[in-house]
Amino acid sequence: MQSRLQRKHEKDSLKQAGKYIVFTFVALFLVVRFGLPSLIRLAAFIGDIKSSSQPIEKSDTLAPGAPTLLPLPEATNSAKIAVAGYAESGATIKLNRGGISIEETISDADGNFSFKDVVLKDGVNEFFAEAVDDQGNSSEPSRSYIVVYDSDAPILTIDEPEAGKRFFDKDSPITISGKAEPDSQLIINSKFVFVDSDGNFSTSWPLSEGDNQLDFATRDSAGNETKKTISVNYTP
Figure 1 (cartoon, rainbow, N blue to C red):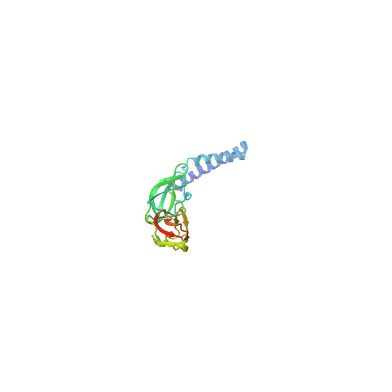
Figure 2 (figure 1 turned 90 degrees about the vertical axis):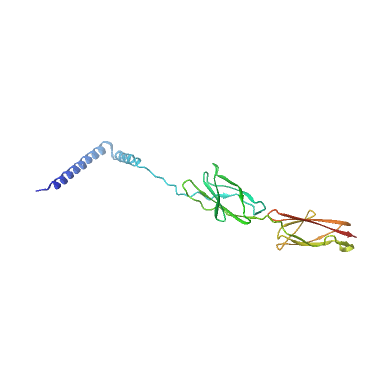
């Protein structure tokens, strides 16, 4: 005799077979009545309805493009500078100095951003920026810029001539020479004088009869200046 469990399994199997038979007849009827393409479209429609009821999760893993910093001065005597650039709109812009994030801001609708009054440390300051979107994706770093903060006045030594020295007859033109900061700008009485990579300068200078005032002004790459004035006398 069959057990109750076996009879239940047989009953379930008959029900399942009955469903397949009914489904087969319905499918054949639809094929005959509407054609195979219509049946395929119906099946696709039912599948779309089922899939649309399932929640779809979207995740943005695409990193934003690296921001662009506008050029910065190579050297300055100002303790603070402004840093600006552009990036993906609405991104969080992190400004780094020496690899450490020091300030953050949000780029505007056009992608522009700026940091005002960024404090410099003495000597070399290396800046770059990174962008982070609202999904937390970080960009590659921007191009780096090095800014040297230098507030010291440049050196200026006048070796020749000595202040107050008197010259006669064929002494003119005289030689003016000395030392300044390497590759700095040197102006003597509105005339540019070359300073070499070691800081040396030398030029020939014609004298006028009587007292001749010589005004020296040197400026380094950071904009610091040193000025000196001497006078010499010339008797033809």
